Image 1 (cartoon, rainbow, N blue to C red):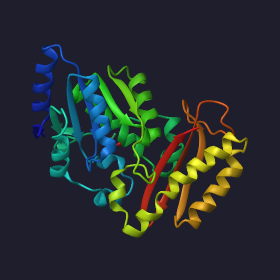
Image 2: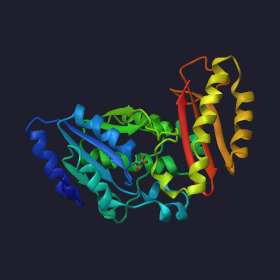
Image 3: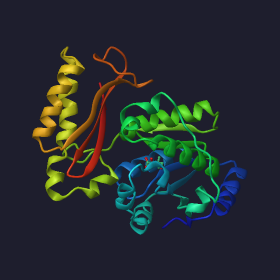
Image 4: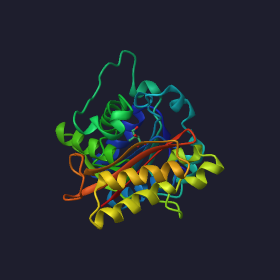
Length: 280
Ligand code: PAF
């Protein structure tokens, strides 16, 4: 059954109020739509951990630093609702833009440090946009738990920091990246890849796995990263924005995985920006 699609925060609040009064726990899965198995794995996790599940679909203009990227972002609401009908979803919140950014809106939530590296360094304002909309989605849904994919590892760390710093009464739960059979991390942006580019795309994950092997065998991120960058260009990628080994907690740059570490990459392939990461 297709869950009710709510577009006004008053309708959302009424539903949430009734659930909370009945003593039920509420999960939120924030998305920008174009749902794939990665999103659906978050919904499954939410279903098992909470009584009620809200999926939000909102293509947030504030987190796009490039107007063309915003315009090209896939929008597939009917399809998304259909996919969610196979899950125990209680409400799909697709807020009208003024429900998130009413006239005169001038608040910006900005997190320092964590957002100044990796995607934050290449997409100015992106994480301010994410932090601002996520805060609004948390306060509007009053969710007890919120589910995010590790595919956006930096985003997950930023949202955890945000919730801790602002005492938001929500537990932020990270869920593993879901991959296609050939290793490509599932992403709504994969829909933008041409057939030719799609064939080349798994090289991104292969580069991470090879580099992780090299690190386990005593290599340094500096030397292995240089080799991996060359391999990606040879495989057809146009540009590697970053390919870094970073500490999981504060995202500081590492040359050896001597703490809990993650390899993270962002690269352009035929006009599409792909990101991925793996634990080391
Ligand atoms: O990961 C996303 O899809 C978005 O950044 C999010 C968390 C829904 C905020 O717009």
